[in-house]
Image (cartoon, rainbow, N blue to C red):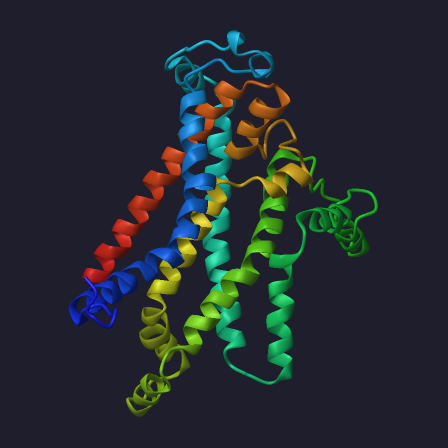
Length: 310
């Protein structure tokens, strides 16, 4: 209630001010939360619903052609040899790619942290370029490098008397060829993350280690590496999630070939959904992949928390 001069009592003014202060965080977080719900949560819910139907191209034209099939898509998925092969291919990429990205990114970041002059700043830009280069341009360049007849790599091998390699047409070699491109593309961003973490380590820790007689390796082993645990956790979790969704490189370089040797789970889902128009079946694969990512990520976070607590 207002007083004779038309002003609110001090208690009500303080109450309104407190409400405004509490509302400020929600105002900033609200738009991001709405976008997350619209483009993150809602598609998962829709995919879960579609996975229980036999939706295909005919169902998109007429809803009467869509039937509820329950868990039939999941039963078919579990007995699909192509799906399990795509799981094995994805795991093979993860086993090779994730440790390689972490080790190479950490080594590059540690090297870049040794200097701040123009040369080192130019190197940071050089290593970051793959992260912002379009995958189509990357595929064109690497496709020419991998060309069996006219590629630079086979030219170099031939010039020293070594036999040519079928970089993208041999099932085993194609896995490594595609993996190399993905590792090269991912190291730039992760190197910058590690570099930022290294530069935030206080110099006093290194000075104290030097007074104790620690060499460069001991400083890295007992100072740098332990203090990078949060950056290491972030890079490991995000890299593993990215490789579970591995799609761009095999799609543009080999289209999943030869004979399915580079068909990842995401590429398998894409083919079922957009090449064979089996949207219900593809949605079942999407939900299965989502559950796999959820379990792997939760396990990683739990392991990191346990190690951090110990």
